[in-house]
Length: 204
Image (cartoon, rainbow, N blue to C red):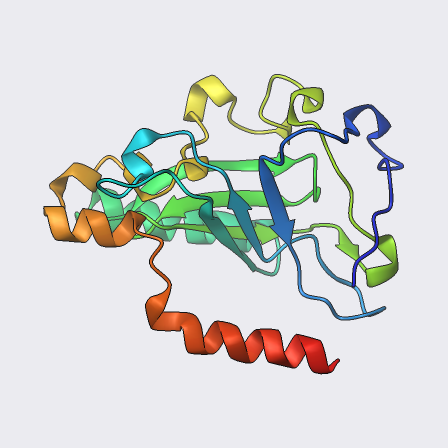
């Protein structure tokens, strides 16, 4: 179990408690073996298009993160997806990047896949262990540039990786049923898997 660790030693001014949680980074728990800053990111959405018909907006997956070897690989992937989008007319779209984050310190590049889900390719990021604990940050304390060290500004990109599939420009091209399937948080098809994970955690 991760323990609350208090303010970050690097960004103490961003520490906050007692406020609503906007988002959470999740990383693989490898004990004291260093692991990436995060593997996926869950957030509360503000875009009303993310609510299924007759329902409310629920927290959902913002993106999954895949590590590549170096800066060259980040840019190589960027150009490959850009080629697919611009020259082959395949349904890929830049969401945010290329840049370097403050939290995690990694070089990033975010793309919408053909159904609007966001994938991050990253490199050269922080690695941490269980004893590092968990940190709480106030996002407004990270500055006006979308917590970038360098890269596209919020105005440049809109940080559309934070808004789910409906943020992709091609979302409205999908039929009604497909749109609903992308924003519906009905878990009945994965309840068995969820119970197995919970049972496994209880046995540890």
